[in-house]
Image (cartoon, rainbow, N blue to C red; front, top):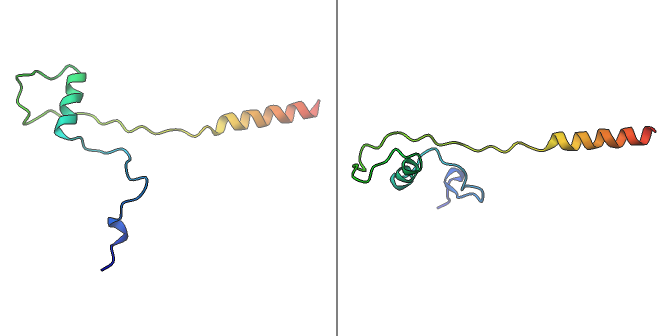
Length: 74
């Protein structure tokens, strides 16, 4: 039987997740100083998960190209 394409594991599948495990949430709460050791691990407060997006460095290449054109005109 063949596997559906949506179920295959892709090479870049380890990206950012929208949900943290309980241990990850507790670690994040400790980092934010919102966790007490005697607190119950059930019913944890929500923790914001920030997605990191990298911008392409296209602006620098355009600037260097413009500088190169200016140098050739002289």
